[in-house]
Image (cartoon, rainbow, N blue to C red; front, side, top):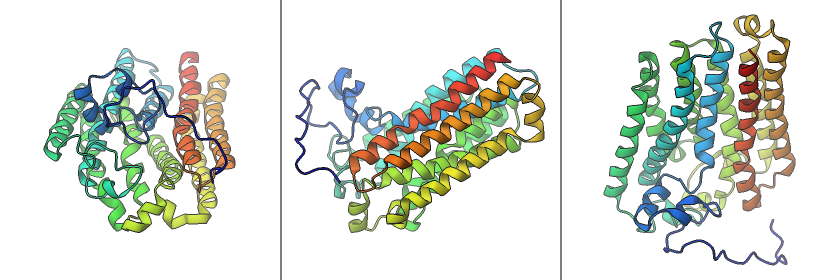
Length: 335
């Protein structure tokens, strides 16, 4: 718990105040600092002022792309540069469209939760109609990017809309809504593998399943911020389900995620590509080891009753997911 004797931090005076800043927005975020006032409610709907989620959607895309390059006998192609850049653009747009959809679906719930009542819809910054139009605009821009990929990747991208559509309602009918989030948020691992290779294999599937376990890890931490409000309004989550057993469950998710990542890179096809170059093989495994070490650090620092600690640890998963990206990118350069 936070120390009641601790001197609270003074309110920030270096951010513009338009009366609409969201409670859990990051300090010095670019939306509140630089964007025209009229645009801020829409960018807040997209969570542009809270970029952690965009990173968490993007990182599995880069995982899938980098492993696809590493395990492809042809190696790096010129089009892979576009894939790396375009999936970042797509992650921003699809995360924005998905969050806008989530806020539309939860518009009658968010006003009852302390952390979310300042969002644009419950606070009256935009209407439901305006939010719906903004959602469609973002989705169409993302679809335009998707059309630059091969046919198989376009098919995967369209299929991904199903879990995105279902996720906002999952917390109404299951204690495991984080699984639905994981299914949606890690789809990019399959999509980018398919965009590079034109097909799927066991490696991207294992990578995808590892990402789902990672999502269960970090989003359970995130959900502990709202567990009291969720209990009052009857919203389900793994945070409420696990309660004081959360550290044990998070450890299980960590172990399963690490196991699946290791299995993904020791398939016969993967080993045939990695073993001839010991340094590349080492970089791949160092990426997985560093990722696991970061999750272990989070578990050691976890306090499920301190909302600020939970938010900080949730956001730190950007760094956790970047560790494999850095090492696997080095591996690509060494091939």
